[in-house]
Image (cartoon, rainbow, N blue to C red; front, side, top):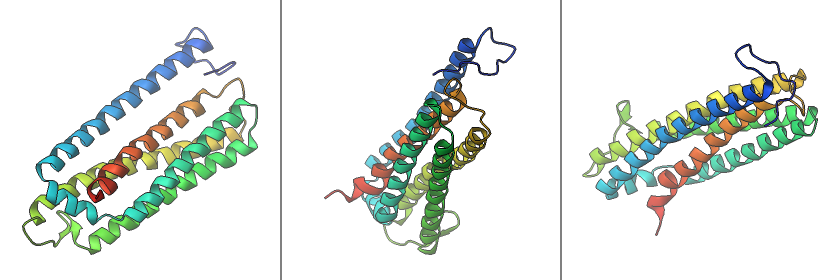
Length: 215
């Protein structure tokens, strides 16, 4: 990271110290987020081993096509934010603004698609505690699958929403020439956050949409 002549906060001696502190803070935050989702994934895996048939049945109720499109959208957004950062590092601004807006738009489209997915599952009676109408011997343990499904994807969607707002702020600041080839640390840290959001989904997608459909 290169902060150059960044505005220096009073608690720092120089820009390099401020840059390093910012990076350390962000990486610490990302590590805690990774641990949080790691615990969720571990819990999901344990429950899947305990109730394999119910989790397989629940997974088959998810929309694999929509999940695949959502994955492609997030991966594309990750490329866009990386290109935006690179443009700023090279002294650009206009292209970076559009790429950041594109990334935010892709994030919003992901949320819309996920909302549609939730609505479809609600209509199928697959929302425990609100509208769950499944019957049969697997109905009760299958509720556990959907509880974990909504919890994991819901928290991920919350992170996507936060990321969208953050990147729109970065787009506004970029448009106002707040960043340059000498100072882009806030944008770089925001991009790191967005990459974490994408990486988490790369684990969510196969665990929930694909694994139980194997074979």
